[in-house]
Image 1 (tube, rainbow, N blue to C red):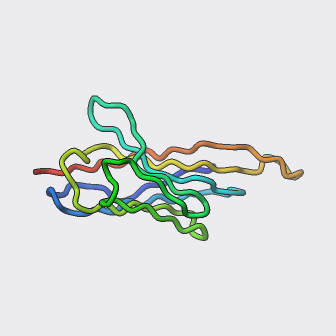
Image 2 (cartoon, helix red, strand yellow):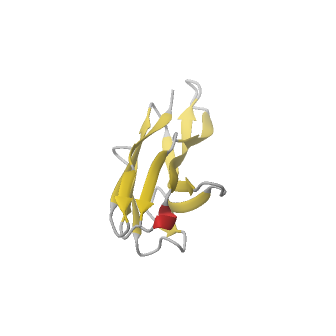
Length: 125
């Protein structure tokens, strides 16, 4: 079974740093976009950053210059380095990956949109 396994997160004071990591477990044919989303209490889930298989990236305006997304295609991982954290960054962070998996020996592929279980980031002032 293909799934995402997240690590990192925790509590930090304003101005501090944290690093989130996420790995794809199981057999996949291809991993396309990988990204991080977050959901703060009482708010909708929002995109934080996304990175393509070619390593082009996009960020939410609120995190530009503070967060950096990276990926290791060989290890099937994506990471989010978060610096200069603010209390408004407090949220549950979710890893997301668009993957293709083989469904039969003839090579037919299925697209899957995978989500991690989420990891809590708390930033105190």
